[in-house]
Amino acid sequence: EAGVAQSPRYKIIEKRQSVAFWCNPISGHATLYWYQQILGQGPKLLIQFQNNGVVDDSQLPKDRFSAERLKGVDSTLKIQPAKLEDSAVYLCASSLGGITDTQYFGPGTRLTVL
Amino acid sequence: EDQVTQSPEALRLQEGESSSLNCSYTVSGLRGLFWYRQDPGKGPEFLFTLYSAGEEKEKERLKATLTKKESFLHITAPKPEDSATYLCAVGASGSRLTFGEGTQLTVNP
Image 1 (cartoon, each protein chain N blue to C red):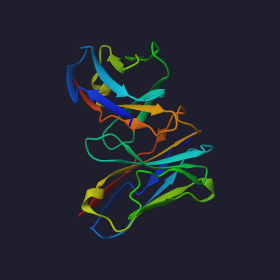
Image 2: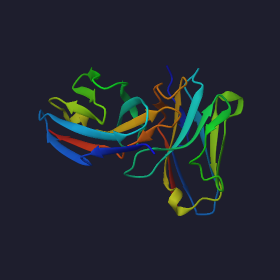
Image 3: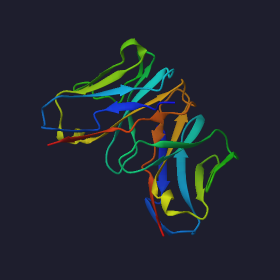
Image 4: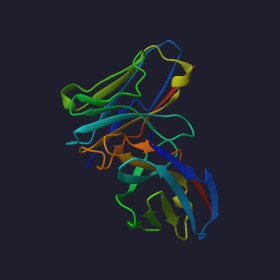
C-alpha cells in the first residue's frame, strides 16, 4: 500500500516570498492533516480536512497560510509571504476518520526561509 | 488545554541496556494515546495506540503501558537501530492530537 506522498522534500526561499507544498494521502483516507514541526519540537496541527471540508484550522496563521483540498483527495498548503520563523518541516498525515484512528505521516517538506 | 510532557529529553544507552521513556499527560476525556518513532529526515512512524488505563501493547523490543496520568515506553535490550526520537501524542474528545516534544534515544554498540 502506498504511503502519504509529499513534494517537494526541500525548499529554500527568501523572506517575503511565497511557497506551496503538495500532499497526496493514502487512498481511501477521508481525513487529511497538515502539521508544522519546528526543530526539536513535536508536530503542531495547522489544519485538518474531513473529505474536502475544514474541521479544524484554529492554529493556522490565516494572514499568511492557506490550504485547500480539492475533490477530497490531494491537498496544497501555501505560505505567502514567508517569515523567518516559518522555517520548519511541514508534515502531511492522513487517517480513515476520527481522533482514535491512526494518523500516517508523509516524509515532510523541510522549508528554510532566509 | 491538553498537555503532554516527555522525559527525558535525551537518553543514551549501551546496546542491551534496558530503560523506559515517560509521557505524562493532562487531558479531558482521553480517547487515545499514541506512540510514534521518528528517524532524522523522516516523518513519524506509528508504533502503538493505547485507549484505556491498564492497557499494554508490545512490538519486538518495545512495550507501551498506560495509566490515568502517564504512559511508559519500555525498551528491552535495545539495539543501535532503535536509535530515534520517540514521540507521544494524546487525542481527546472533540480536539486535535497534541504531541510532546519527544525523547531522543541513542543506543551505542
